Picture 1: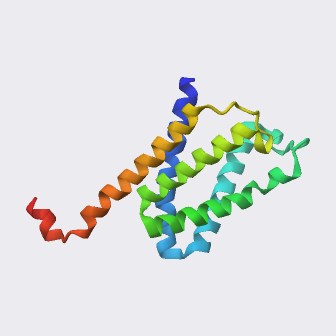
Picture 2: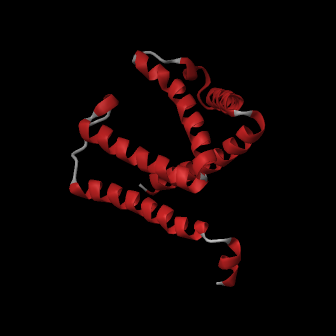
Picture 3: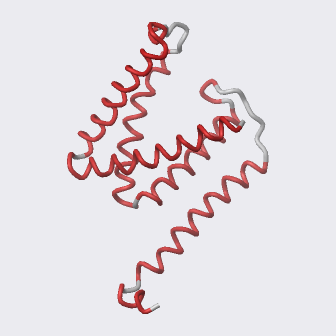
Length: 158
């Protein structure tokens, strides 16, 4: 379990850093060039690392349902939406909303056994956990909104 927690933590930190990098590339290259660069470089890195670690086993894809092949297309939506979200909302708020959305959909997919997942019983604690996280984001956003409306000189006097 500790290994899973560590890997999940690393994943979250990498996603946060990647989103910031994507936003910076977008400022210089534009949205579609950013998406192309991110996914093309990701493909190259994945291919090389996969070939090094798995060899020819990398190409054994039998018994995979056809609709699983479309996850790369979903990746385009992820990069485009996160890049635009960060541009319009800032990194913290956009990533917070994205993570909340991931939690809500993961809870739904688990609870109903969607997309081939094993069905996991829905509990009130899960719902409360997701609502607490969403509430935290609302508090975070509303708490910062009052600070932004005041002129900078007034904030400096505090």
